[in-house]
Image (cartoon, rainbow, N blue to C red; front, side, top):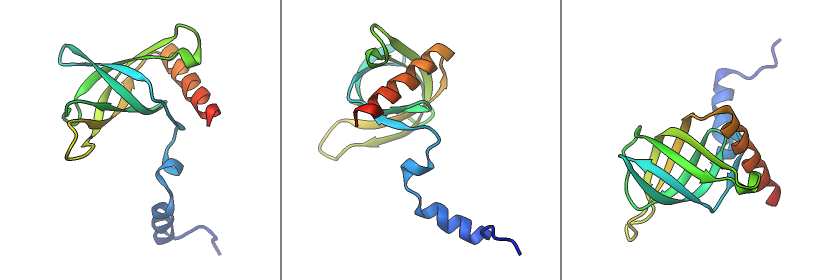
Length: 131
């Protein structure tokens, strides 16, 4: 007799997991500035959180889903003078509130050098160690 859960058990168990438990990579809060390259212009934004897979930040404009943009971020917490750069696609864009002209934007990184990915991992670890 098998002890593995039935398909129905698996789906109900998945519903019980929180977002943090389902994430493949740890996510750390990081209230730091980020430069976002969008439509040939550079925009300053503020990071909410970051992980190896992506970044979530606040911006004063809406960005359509699947827009590819560049990000550049000071990663001094991972080492003096370190910066990281990458490109990613917007996977979520939600207005913060009806009264504010700011949006919370989530970007999935799809293009980043191995050294910048390692820097990103170090940054997330350093941020998680502070909590």
